[in-house]
Amino acid sequence: MAKRILWGHALTAIGLVGALAACSNSLSHTNSAAAVDPSKVGMAMRAQNALESGNLTSALALGEAAVEYRPTDASFRTMLGNIYLASGRYASAERSYHDALTLAAPDPQVVLKYVLVQIGQGKNAEAVAMLGEAQSLLEPADLGLALALAGRSSDAVAVLEPAARARGADARVRQNLAFAYALGGDWDQARVVAAQDLTAAQVDARMTEWLAMAKPGQASAQVAAFIGVQPVSDPGQPLRLALAFGFGLIHGFGFA
Image (cartoon, rainbow, N blue to C red; front, side, top):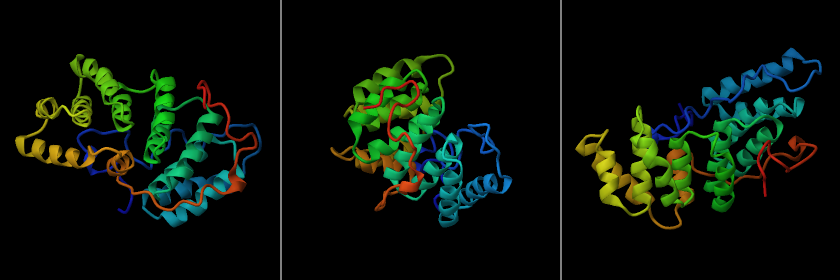
């Protein structure tokens, strides 16, 4: 279906964070003791269903209405961020994920999506700072891949090499390590590591894909290729959805 992806075909062997449409928290969760109008909560469920079916126009209208109704519900904000991201609206997705992280304890997948949309907009320094704050929350496979995409290949290798050697390491860790090697220019080592899980033909295809992504200044294109959604012109999240306390401190993280 259109736009409902597992973070792009390039990640089928790497598996970054799972389905784009997945919300980090149940949409039935609320963040206050205020009375809940079931019909309004139903908007969020309908928005999620529309996202999963690829009907992004309906998903967006319903998702924004749900957030407007319950602006302090982190799960609604996360869902709206997923809708924006599936629509290619990276800046709006960044704001929604930021708001979700401000409202609730950090969810690793929300942190990772937040970092990815920052990288996709060229905000590598901000993304790396966030990864440093959140490194204990993220699996090495995801942390290493995000670092590689942010232009920190050596740091990515430092995270992924011990993870790849650990007992029970899976193909996702090894393929992300191979990718980090490739972005760092070590193509021989990238090929050796990738070959642990792929056929020779698959390795050749993967190297060709990565070579196209490894050009300097291609961070935005790399993220777009990995998540399978190209960025579009983004008017930004509507002002009516802004949190009352605005951009501030993400739970447990210093946010510049």
